[in-house]
Length: 433
Image (cartoon, rainbow, N blue to C red; front, side, top):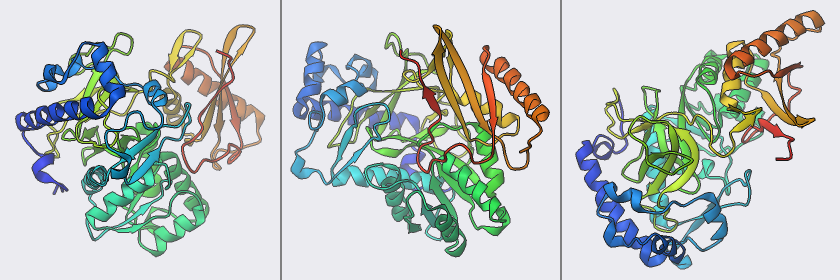
């Protein structure tokens, strides 16, 4: 039987949900206008006042907020509450530039933890479960968000944070962890490490995993499920909006329900900013309608995505988003071809390789080059050069079919690519562009 953390909200009829969004959006626009001079100036530049926003139908009139705005307004320029009313900050990793610092009132944290509790409940979590949170703690939102959500559900929570893999596995076995929360690449690494220790899925009590913070493919999901003997669920979030729990997968495992009572989603054309019709693929934009301390209206995530409004068998009525298909800002353009790392990962996993790889892009004599370094599994490792050459050629052909361009493939020995206990470093772009 499907479980809900807040059933009256998660299964709310869509007309009632839209009315709630209308009410909260109008209130939030007024809050931002009154308390965030930076954003008020952007509205005034467009000739917009709060009186022009009557509900979600008017959302398109508002200006966008981008990562550049967050950097320009750093650190306090987008705050909607006095510092004395804020109780916490979280921060982005800074992997794509200057750090972004987000602020939270206690009310913000309570609502964020509710969103994470919905995600944990959706994968079957109850107060009878043991939830091991192996996301990083500290400024990164992964650990604190799922930790708080686990508490709200009533799970016994193990705040292991990331790293110390042997201890992680020991706790899973000794403390009978049933739900694992971490990045998908670390989940794959845990499974790999367990296998080397002579442990299989039947030796551990895990039943479900909540994995996010980086892109992962359906093939990688199947590989993790097989290795750990669990159901693997996706979760999505942004520090700018709160953290993990903006959306989450249910038992259907075919898209993530957006918590629409807190976030309004739009899909826009990344070039023109035009709102696209339902079902279109484009850039995902979020408006936070309940956040007090750091309220963002029409924040451009740069994630390429589609929304699905069809009824879900789980009974939840909130719209679903697909896994991000890449990003509009860090998508690789190689010799004029748009390349997403997820496409390369799909080819590798379809050929039986583990999900540890690196994409190296360079420019030689004004021509882009693409190399994919792929780690062999221990089972397929060989020093037979003829066999290695054949396997590399097979992958070259597979990548050409998927991407429409030639790539160099280098097979390397098991464990020769540096492991990451946080976000995996997949792309090394050496071009000066």
